[in-house]
Image (cartoon, rainbow, N blue to C red; front, top):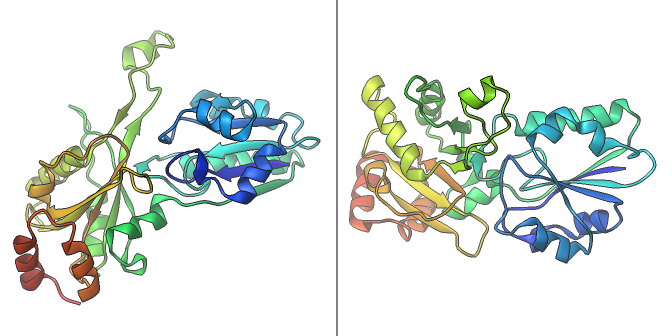
Length: 292
């Protein structure tokens, strides 16, 4: 049996009872370690499980899945995923769902039974910010800008959500085990240090896109909520205008950003107000620009 086990958002204790039983019954345990991070390392997981954990990097998951699936028709193998196996954690990962779906498809083709054990991800834990989940529209991803690549196609999705009065969850880019163009061209397996997009960087890029597009979607006075390390003991939630959030110190990863839709229930606004940088400014903007 191949178990695809969600680990949740924080530490080794977030695994479900069902997931922990699967792990303890498995002969081999792999930790997918390039699309997100926990607040603890694999050593903590090994202590908690009482078993060794193999780090499955991008190369192994995408190119050497046969290693993971070897003999899984005869023995139990666990493939651990931060957050939920089919969801996302706090970050943008373009290939996450595709990669995990591909592993399941390959297992089925080999006649290997598969059981997916779900857990929390940012897609449901974002409710901690006070906004109702059913009032969210399309989720978008914001990638790191480069000197030559500054994509803004997600702006249209934000506009569609805004026109419907819906909130937008923005997943922020991470770069783990990435090669420079030079090292890639020369075939050198030298990797850049990990980078995790901050809420500040995401806001800066959104404001730049708004300046270029000028459609009133992501202006400096748009209300938003910065969410850092949701589901952990150090989670931080701050509400304010985009211009205010640009200068807040949110600490370490992982970060997400929520753009508040122009329809906000009174209870949502009351809940969020406690997170506001400037409650008076928040109240004034809600009164002038937002409605239930």
